Amino acid sequence: MLSLLEETTPGSRRGTRREALRVGGLALGGLSLADLLAHRAQAAPAAETTVSRSFGRAKSVIVIFLGGGPPQHETWDPKPEAPPEIRGGFGTIASQTPGLSVGELMPMTARHTDKIAVLRAMVTNDNAHSTSGYQMMTGVPHVPLNVENAVSRAPNLAPHWGSLAKYLTRGTRPGFPPAITLPNRIANVGEIVWPGQIGGVLGPQYDPWLLTCDPSKADFQVPDLALPADLSSGRLGERLALLDRVNEQLGRAADSVAVNGFNRQTQQALELLSGTRAREAFDLSRESPATRDRYGRTRWAQSVLLARRLVEAGVSLVQINWCNIEGEPNAGSWDTHDRHNDLLKRFLMPWMDQAYSALLTDLFERGLLDETLVLWVGEFGHTPKFNANAGRDHWGHCFSVALAGGGVRGGVVHGKSDGQAAFPVSGRVEPRDLHATLFHCLGYPPDTELHDTEGRPHPLSRGRVIDEIL
Image 1 (cartoon, rainbow, N blue to C red):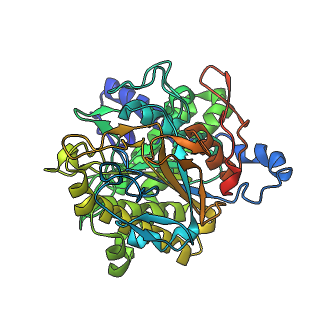
Image 2: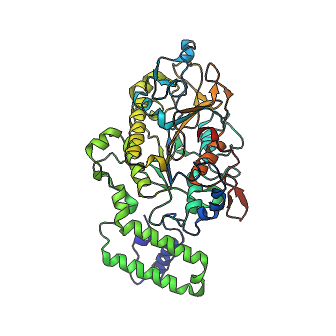
Image 3: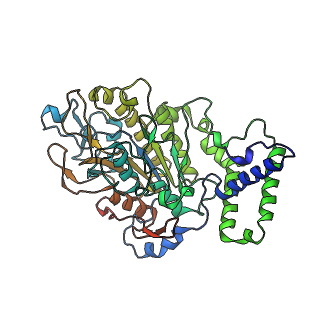
């Protein structure tokens, strides 16, 4: 909760000082709302010389992150001619795109491939959840590769793509955090949080806003946007008055660019608390029962619906992480080391297929798909061959991702894998290329310069824009 709302001891100088510092913390950070510079304006000259019609087409990005790794064989790169131990237990179905077949467990998604571009040769060369995930979310390989249970520490502090979006769009969309992650952070067993989910070298003020929630609950509300029940408007006014006194004591420093930026952040934080726009965006009861049913009533599916509402309200980047499911192997993630076919058929693929197709339908019907880039990704794929436990293991040497909307050309397949979907044959791409393409669609070339907390310059991406899908 915001420290602005915390109780103090009346008449206590120590308590007042502590509260002043905490309120100052609100002024210095708020809800991690960055509002110092409109970087998009700086990139405008580059946009004018770019021939690609996709440059700057997207206003927002939705990342569907299927933690554990969705298998390429049963989704976008089936191998029906391969032996059973590679092909797996499922067939293929025709899609909306002539000549493109997808796994049979994607019947609803298959009707939308005219809106989707598939990358069949994504490579991280990393078979560890933590470090391959770091590379996917930051576009930078972890040093070293293949380290499970890695955490955020130097030299692996590249910023999350939401942090980059937050840095670039700061000051342009008042009233909302530019980047939100929901409904949970990604972590290995034991709550070992993966690296690559924070601002890293850009600083904690660029961390995406983590929203731990369950939008499927009937009484869902966002705790960080709710005032405590015992806090009256009068008491809130007292906190604001205290904040004004702190600002007065800053004297001439209050005229500095930095402090003015902090004041804007404070205003945004208060708008989130008191404004109706935020409450309306998070209010899923405004959606019809039919729409909610179309996505599915699970925690993850309703998070996908919430993501649509957030980008509609102006959030730049929303990442929806797959949710753990109690009682299921590997906590119900896509990490299917055993009972692979059973888990895919019983809930993994049906839940994903329903919510993903509902999102594409929803965005299209609302006229939002052309300005919303949707990424369908995981940290890696799965091994070509099944193991002794009827499962597939980790595989970062060749896997599939999908993009739709926001300047992406639908009905396209880029890249080709070998006969086992094990290694690229052509069209090899890396996460850094995915990042370059994402920010190209948002209107920022890869050589856009960012500065870390020490003032050192960094390019936005060291990858190349994947022109073949734009």
